[in-house]
Amino acid sequence: MKKFYYLINIQFIGFRYSGWQKQTNAKTVQEMVDKTFHFIFDHDQFKTLGAGRTDAKVSANQFALELFVRDEQDPAKLLADLNTNLPADIRALDVTEVDESFKIINDPKIKEYQYIFTYGEKIHPFSAPLMVNFSDSLDINLMKEGAKLFEGRHNFKSYCFRPNPAGEFDRSVELCEIVENDLYTASFFPKESWILQVHGKGFMRQQIRLMVGALVRLGRGEITLEDISDSLISGETAKEAIGFVAPSSGLILNKVHFE
Image (tube, rainbow, N blue to C red; front, side):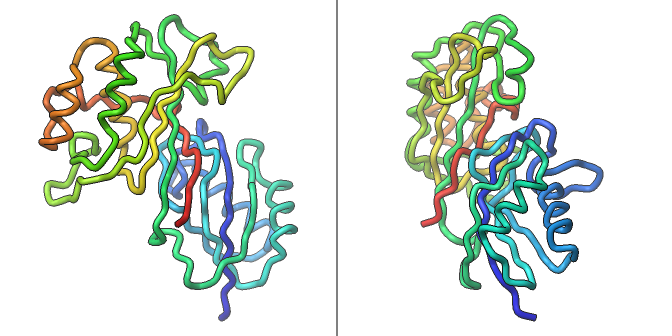
């Protein structure tokens, strides 16, 4: 049977989902997307494959998926049908036909992530799906210094959830910086918030959340810049505190670039 292949970019708020990938007894973004395709096509002769996984409650400005389907589709019509039938917290951005040689998992790509956070008094509950509030005071300038230490190629074993002893932990981070948040605004957001921006080719499970956790510990004065540097050289946590996993709801997959 001939198959047709489509690259589809979507965006979603992940707060009520257990990540992208289908799971037993859990609501996921892929499950909702597949249900929508089933309704549109009125058959199950299709398959979807994402460009990666996301943790529960993680959102995306642009998440890439590939659709394999038995019937040729009109990209413009398929885009319209998706946005008519997807739930309100998922939107399709574009649909592009690709050929069989395109491999969404194996093709080289750069991913851009953002982590939105603030600190201090408890914030408005409406902010919860996109922003994490750390109650303790944070030294943002010191955290900015710490973020730059992650740039370059390092051993990120200390920033991998349950690392396999035989695993490969060297990763390259092209950009890691903390900037003031002027991208996401709302009347109920706090006056000040920040974004950790991270760009790279490959990230391990919970790597960015562990990086955020280390920076928060740094901002609290619990670890030092030297501790972070040492953890990247040795691949072993210099202090247990470096293993703090930041909440997932502040994390956004901002963009996926295919090379």
